[in-house]
Image 1 (tube, rainbow, N blue to C red):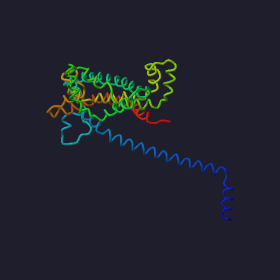
Image 2: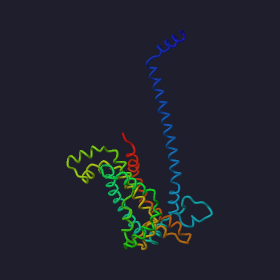
Image 3: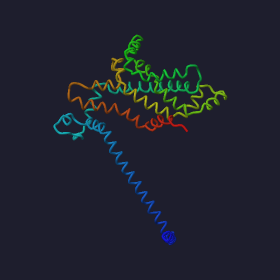
Length: 304
């Protein structure tokens, strides 16, 4: 009892100024701890980023490195005599810019086609009512479990009988829709209340007008994510373009890069220079659209 009274007497003797100083010192300690944690996280992130990007950085270094420095007894991580000769050889050995143009045409066409078809299909599965909707959606999702290699021969025989080989049609039309895109758009649309569609219908709004004026402005994150995802996948296609194209006028960049490889050991630096040129567009698209990609992937998964 006496000890408690003593503590209360001591607390009463503490001035208001001392209390403020005590609180201020605690706040400064908390701020210092937060700064230390932030600096530690930044250092760790920089170290992990450098570790992950080290193969790409080394490839860029090789692209500027003469062949004599690459094939030497010493390990050269940075070129001692940087040169642009590898890039010049990569451009002149094969029509690399033509391959890049073909890949842009194919990737942009597939990207636009999948955005349109997948958004329309997802709208039907989300807002319209018809018989067998659940079964049909399950069938569409089941196609995601079928690997592309299992259907590549039948698809080749089909397009060959139609006379589509070595054309833009054969590179674009088989990929104008995807189950992954339909699923992503449907998950995003499921966050919207059905009353929004019903109110629009009562006002005389058609389905296409509802999609273009209401859904599209509200689903920009999903469209951005779909655009980035589809463009990168289309840009990196290799097996199908290799199978259905035979002329340099229709080959894509992934096939063109393989044409840079030869039995000559000195072609390694030239091929890496070509790879660096090819990686720039897809890497730029990913860096520009990474926020939209992450936002679109997760926005439809959280409701509330």
